[in-house]
Length: 102
Image 1 (cartoon, rainbow, N blue to C red):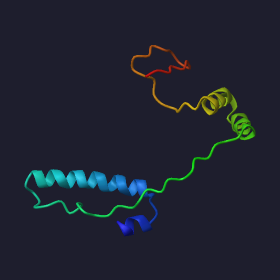
Image 2: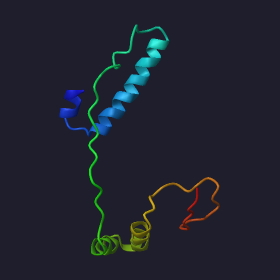
Image 3: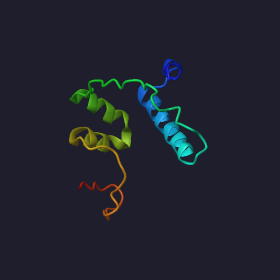
Image 4: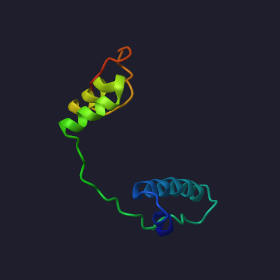
């Protein structure tokens, strides 16, 4: 783990890779192909939580201006706090209509 972390990937990526490998090895143990999972007990890197950075009004305006025809979308996302995602399956909204729901 230390070599993988030292070579550059973010701790979250290393943790994800460990999780995938651990699941594969756990299946091999269940199938009787290995006596134990060598990924068990391996110390994973800690996740470092960074303070979120928010754009101010001037930065949002500059970003929107730089995005050309997507300026309205940039402003909409910046000021509503919504995240980009797929259209909900129950939403019959066409094209550029925003569907917000739970």
